[in-house]
Image (cartoon, rainbow, N blue to C red; front, side, top):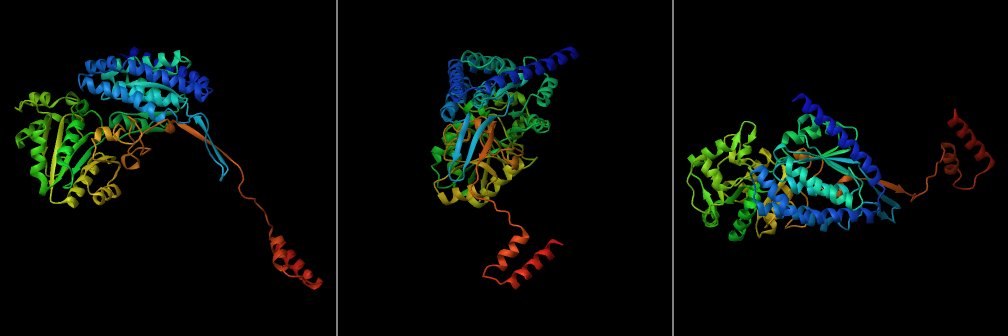
Length: 484
């Protein structure tokens, strides 16, 4: 084991060094050359989207094949359509009035930490945004998805090199050890860490001494307000929560409704495949769903049927999501936490003010800074939520999963969603190539600087009107007194 650890550390060093050498060459590429490389990578990702999705499902044993195909396509084509015209080389902006010219410079070598929940799509996405900004990238895969992540990185590297990029511009650890990951994090040739994964891994990235972009957990409350189209709102929630079996951190985790509409929402949820568990069933699921260290990895990305069979509860055929009604938030109400699987919490509150407070409680318990969904046709309440909720994505009348990543909204398409300082993140944005460039500023003068001595100031003040020789003598005396 020690020999394997040592060889993995050496591999990390070799990959970082090769990536640095390649990046120095790539940094000299023109915008046209960079864009040609990126387009080739996108084409390769699209051509292999299904194969990589199948590989991810087979290796991790969770998620939905068709949805992983969609994620791979989104991570390539969806991201590309947003960034293809983005200037990342040379002069990227010029303010003629203020006479400031902004010039893009790459950050260097990016370290990409990849989760098991979205393995191939995140590898594709991070490869594309890194090379679009003239950086190299080296990946540290999650151990339970190492083969599919390595395969995705190889596909991206091959396409980039064939399009003219230098060899070594994209690397990936093949020997997965904590020692190798730590070595990469602290290696001198790594400029920035792009971390997507569990809280411990993200915290380690921020503790490495390197600049880092990381994301905290999502715990998205979904408020269905009384003016909402209930059937449509529930359809959005069900589609979102079952997309890849809930593995995207922007997926809904709790539905919050007002008392006056509870029965209608419950009936619609049942009609669309939701199963409301009894208190005893909730207890069984909660105990199996969470361990002292967090969510049980064996249930991540699993279907409602799989979970029900594991805990020994009977559910109707066609059940899509298990739902547990909760009356509080905290350790005694575990369903109020992030659940990357087909399980939802359900809260009923007196009115929209109480619902608002419940959403805040859920976010403060876990997921602060991430996202919130609201279904409503009342613009006043929508704005109220936007102004006062401690999140950076307020998703209106859309599936939270797909809205948060920019699939159904105008938010920047991304698979790394910043939670801002509230969530312990260095950005509140969806991360794009612009986050992976440094900006030089060429500044010309817009006003003259005149240095006026104290003596000159006194002379000018005293000589505002014509003066006599006697006045001049007095002025000289004042100047001499100032100089003592």
